[in-house]
Length: 339
Image (cartoon, rainbow, N blue to C red; front, side):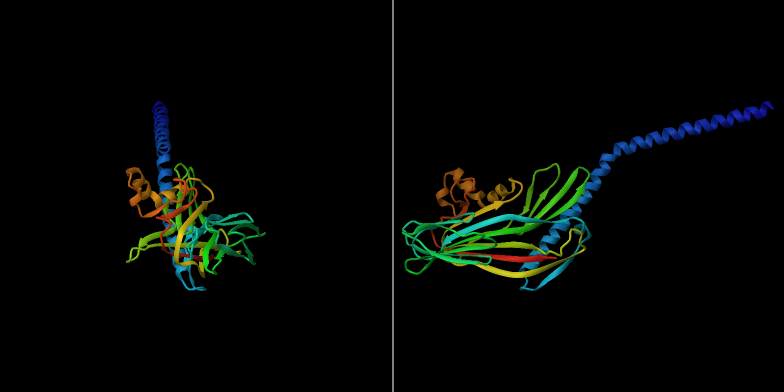
């Protein structure tokens, strides 16, 4: 009986020992998971960030390819990462572009809501024609200047000016651009990528917005030394049938509209970017950064390229320097429908 009782006590002691050991193991494993938790979250976030960034780059490339296709052509893009994260960005950018095309005068057009103001330095501007969605209206100026109001201006707005000699002397264009936003959920928030006008803009929850790819604005010199400016705008038309959760994304070209194609002077381009105010300064610095270097070195008179139109911040627009020389200007608008 004593030996049996002793055996029971030994068995109980062994069970208690094993239980305590298991409790210690569980406690240690729990502590390890607590310590590793942030690292595991970081690994998951890095994986999601990488997948989202790659998916956005691929989609942007496909959109640009579709934009180059003939009207009615296009392609289908499939990506599970995108299918759960796509949103539309309405009125993401507004571009105002104007230049003198003929004659020798300098003309300026200001569009403020429905009010159109036209002035010309030598007062040679005479006839103004404004076209927009469903609107085409002309009027005559007095002494080369004047105001005119047109209600319900929308879409791509084109304002052409003819001088007293019947020469097409000036053009003003306003274009509003739509884009796409891709959202990727992370532990600490949402990683977003905006695809607007050929640009790719990324935002991590804890970081500042960074422009990874810029709109397609370029300049170079022709063989005879004439400056050439090329701008390709891209508007993304979100179809009514498009849904946030799409596995197959149809990208269809709706054609190209030529806005400027030939000689010009006094080019002014004003860009308004909706959303975060840090995007536009990155655009301006990318296009005009060399001008700031020449200005700081005291040799700005030798600079050739994009620079600020008025204030150095670029909020008044940018131009090609020197602005009063003849240049070769090409501006086109591509439209891609997403459905």
